Length: 289
Ligand SMILES: Nc1ncnc2c1ncn2[C@@H]1O[C@H](COP(=O)(O)OP(=O)(O)OP(=O)(O)O)[C@@H](O)[C@H]1O
Image (cartoon, rainbow, N blue to C red):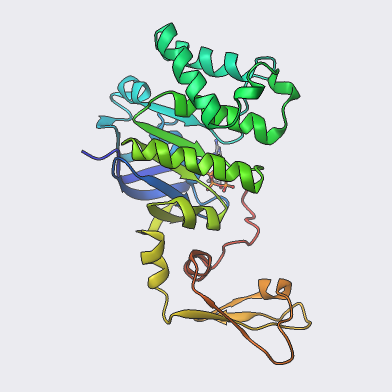
């Protein structure tokens, strides 16, 4: 049995197709990342898989249960951090995590121990009795992660869990997610940080315009690019300057440092290059958003 399975999943809003037949199969014990440009359908897919939104077609199973016909069975087995979620600000981290676990049905003793372990793991134990409104944005985001990781849910969904976190905090969260998946659970997350996806994912799903367009281990995806290296040309001026990767022209090269007179920079291929080549519109404004 797989942790997440979707077949030909469809959803539209106001007659516009947002998910156009998504196929997905995610194993247990992995960190799976959904990458895609703004408006690609990531949040819509997560909302369907977490039983918050009805699909208009296709099937989806989470932890072996149909998200439509057996939604309450699914809910018992998952934990979710929705996009833009915030913990309740007048609570303390300990109150928030502990009460979240009680509401999930854990006995008091188990909830107390799990809350403590998770707050310690996320580096929040010292701050456990500080009201959340006194914490920084990054700290309160970590409180949410502590809550879902304390849940022992079979599958956890995190919609952009590391937004606004500094580099050290991101690593704390990555380590915790890795520990959680090593224990056999599945972590399914979205992120706009391609370096994050490359570093922590066992498997990456690329979604564009409502369809999964590729899937694989980050290294496997990168290996699909022709050649071994990406050559980056430093350009001195001109808003129209760009580098070519395959047949695509990327103007972000303007932000590169000069390497030197006539010098070129040669770097190993990265997931970012793969994504840029595969999704040509990545980084452009999405008018419909
Ligand atoms: N409730 C809604 N009503 C109408 N349109 C919606 C609704 N929810 C999402 N959409 C539209 O569906 C498309 C996909 O949105 P979604 O939030 O799933 O994208 P996303 O990939 O998560 O984007 P982002 O990276 O910006 O978070 C967008 O064009 C959005 O405007």
